[in-house]
Length: 367
Image 1 (cartoon, rainbow, N blue to C red):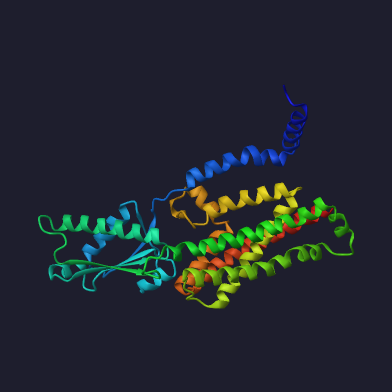
Image 2: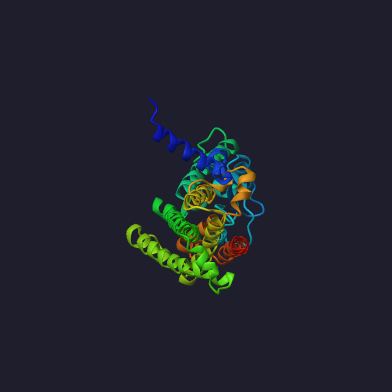
């Protein structure tokens, strides 16, 4: 026999949930979008590795190795500036650099001094291991073709240097991403719930009836969370250094400025979510629906270079991507100026757009 009370509750909850167009989108459309997104975007295979080559103009064998690497499907030519291969890796122009002997690899091999040095950015441990494995295969293949019938390793040595993480500590790669993820989660979620909580409690009308300007209300609701975010980012940094031994090789003011701009951007996104949502349940679901794709498209766990072009373009409007680059560059590489200012500028631009849209939506909500 059907329990009429349970039947009534069941019908009420279903109708109340599905009659809201926003909830219908969250329940039915969002899972399909995320399934397609993750299905195409997530790949642990390492490809499109930016490979630079430092060689003399007459080094035919060195050029042959470089071309074979670029044609393998694993590597792409790195667009480099200057002559310093270490600077190429530090600035992110190249993920790896082949350094050939000064007088040419072919001549060096014939004299039994053919040493090729491979510089690898090991701040991403998984990627660094793949680069080492791929390049060994390419080098041995070329040497067997050029010197058939003899030992390919004779007169040839391969020197690999793992930069910025020589011990290949996985925590050095993962902890900056976890720092970014935790900070983003706290700031967006707290801000998104703030205005919606006022609306549900019935105090929002009292707030807007006070003799305050729109920007004063918005600033009053967001500035406390910016201060809280700055406290949290230092707390997480202290834990990462003390517990995991994460190095801090860059300038503190760069870290502080990057954290401030990122918190500003994420709080603006949280405010935008709060102006769209009518209930705390909607705000929480919308927050997580933003966070999951943003984390996946940040490069924290899966290389952005492996993704389809459409998704990789979407990643360039993701604030988490730029913050992750900033954290790894400041903490592990010392904070290259070009990487710092270019990524900070992109993050600031996202913050400006998010603030403008949030303020416009907030003003419409008040009206």
